[in-house]
Image (tube, rainbow, N blue to C red; front, side):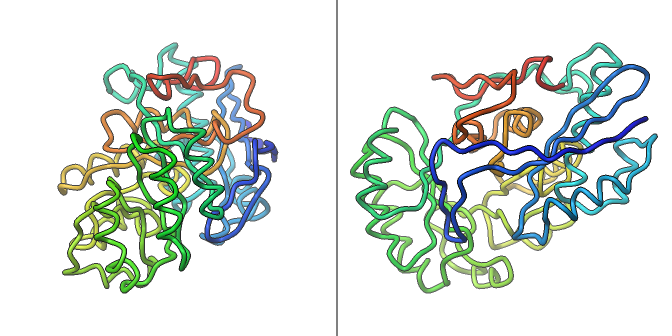
Length: 320
């Protein structure tokens, strides 16, 4: 088994801003696993919020010497490196077996899922214009997390009066700010609030009224983090770059649903190769947020299909 990793850069269609900063390109790592004449592919997006860089994730991937199994990858921490390797091994197994990933996972054949489309953080007038441009989309996600969020929220609702709206504060609010905003979120028809408080301060959500479902993102990584969410959150955001791949993402989905949580399936800003495995996890999810390729100016040679039915499962030529 030969394992190799290469950096790739995809230009964004426009500047993408969240409360932590802006970017104009998506920097990803592409993993290639070769064995017996078959090749499997995976992609990850190292995330600085979790102490990941292109360099240290590359080193972690290169530390793995084949042959290795998906279960053998659990010696690595949950995160970007394990994600790319895990997904590449799934792809390799599919090609060896001549089957699709959903078949190997024992899942029903996947169908398209409506995905959120993310509006970049900007001044209210610009966000209203973004919302109006995308008002045909059934589900819009707003990046917030500043002291001036009320004006932005009002502007987006004005620009897209019929779209369902979900909000991502990216840990940018305090408990007091969230409590003040909550009635307005209800008034404006917000369907979900993602990670309103910093992960290290989310005990403040215990006992707090949650008129809008609250979703754990930075507070939820893999199955080991699930017990800490009790009493604070209603929904768990599953991202493969947090879980460490499709294998753990499927385990987390099953465990979260068994605990009574609803599931959101999200992504970092990456290419169709990064989203492809997540389409299996997204089946029947409360919210699917796999819009990374929609934010790019360029993509993989065989990209995912996005249309009025949502994001479609990948072709075998892309992954799995």
